[in-house]
Image (cartoon, rainbow, N blue to C red; front, side, top):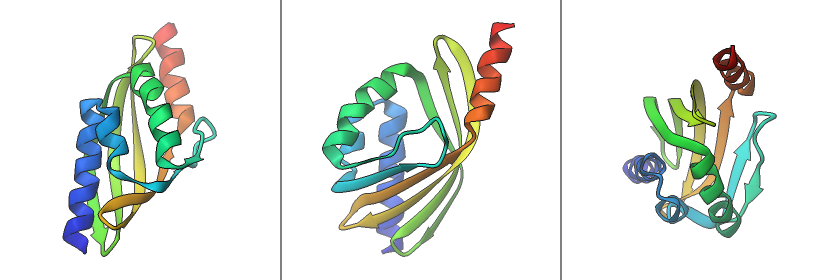
Length: 129
């Protein structure tokens, strides 16, 4: 199961890095839970709702890139330490974070995302000065 979990997570991250909303949505279950822990994030449930939001997210976070710092897999669960970079309103931003995934039937059933929204706001404010 661990190899399948790793492959699913890697496919998901590659789709995000490619900016391919359909490929990202194809990696998740119909009842996918997308949980954000940051005050700036908004959680949701369901592949259809997730796909609907992805287009705007990928357009707003230009040149989005997740660089994996560490990927740990245990059976149907994975933890990914990442460095996310993007441009927001043309301003470069980079923030470290952590994904937690649960995989079911070869798809991501639950994703929990931990990152510090204050770090993003500080970088955007510094860019304005």
